[in-house]
Length: 175
Image (tube, rainbow, N blue to C red; front, side):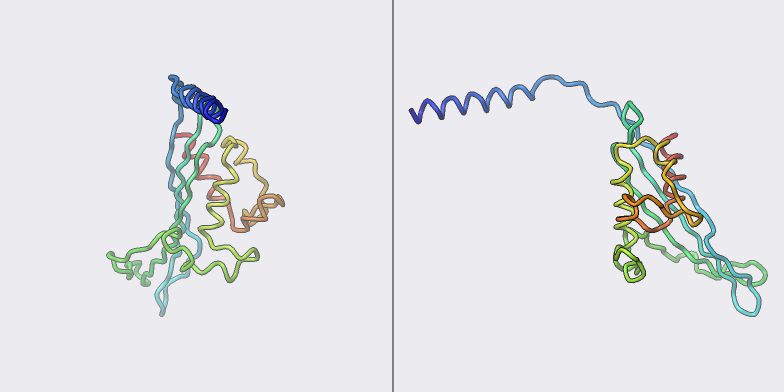
């Protein structure tokens, strides 16, 4: 009896494995990448050097044949460039600005975050949130004047401004 049960189990497992071996059509997907840059803050140069803080957001997005997002990756770089009154750049050309994902906890947002999350954690949460949505649905996510989300479902995991995420995602999806 035990052998018969074992035989039946093996047959069912073999049939199940073989059922997955059929030639399925590969899913058609498209991937786009966009990088947008904005000047976040700047000060004029005078007796002290001026400073320009630049925010660069990069989004890679993959959409299926129905236009729904199947994968989204977001990163950003915050760079500060110093310059003198004549406009000459004082920041060395060899300066390396690590991305916010590379900085991870070193970015230092967690202590100021009302939800106790770092930038990279919130960007990843936003990427998960938009998976399964269309770029038009992402563009329609409600935000306040500071471009922070206003919906309770998203606010539970993302409190940073998402305006650049939305813009870069739309641009990437269009490519």
